[in-house]
Length: 211
Image (cartoon, rainbow, N blue to C red):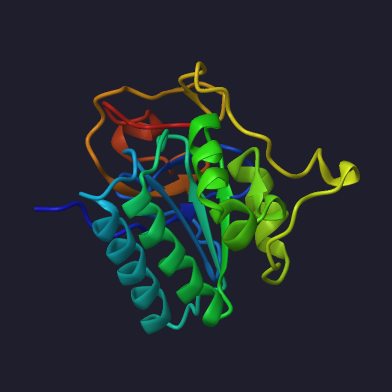
């Protein structure tokens, strides 16, 4: 069966994000969906990507946590094809109609270049909605109302993302190894250390993805 839709729990005070399915007892950032898709985006999986995200947003709304921001960790998305790009555009347009911001972080160079080539970066996302790290995106991008896409000014260059070198196979350039043959998976992330008693007093589970 396909993996479950994403959900994100966080622990405040750290910049560590983990798979929510392994650490379900942490603090949840209100109105923000943080997720990661562990595969390139292409014609065969783009609709699954979009439907998984929509499903999670519906669950949030049904629980009284009306979403205002979607924060997408792109550290495992190294490319996107034309079909997936159109699906992404439709998804972003739908989010914007509902006044939900779409923010990217940890974008790899080739993925970013593809978004620029398709015109999606300038017309649908904007450099002002891209950040170098999950923590930066959560604290700065998700603390403001939705921003229309635009290019950043030199004064904003420290806050807005450039991109991760595709030669750096760690997540965000900070230690998470990304295997080339990772399973396709839409994953919610958790920020912080696990509570005592989770998996033997806080040690990461085997195969745990960490940043």
